[in-house]
Length: 151
Image (cartoon, rainbow, N blue to C red; front, side):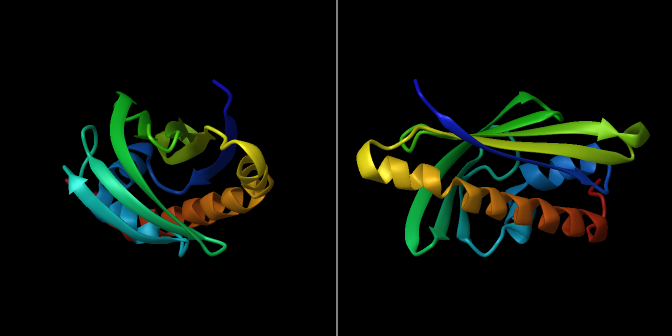
């Protein structure tokens, strides 16, 4: 099946296990979402595998709601959020750097393209989505530095 991807990466100034906890705990995650994410509802669970969320997004006046299911293909290292109906698959990959004192975070979303003109428009807007994700990682970096490590 054809897909296209949006990829961003950043070194986060916090330990990988702390960053993983913040990303996988949706009560924390909603605190570093950029403005394009209008709301993040927790439908089931809330932390890690089995969690289901509803993410309300508004990008350039186009509103979309994704129902995302979280899995942990490699707990503590890789987290995945999937909306099978929308054809969206996001992978968060956490890699220790600098002796484990910082985290290289790789974020990739694969999209199943829509047919016709909408699909073309969607692909043309890919750089805007990359900007949203870059802001999310910047916000996460700041949030991770000011949020105490949970026990």
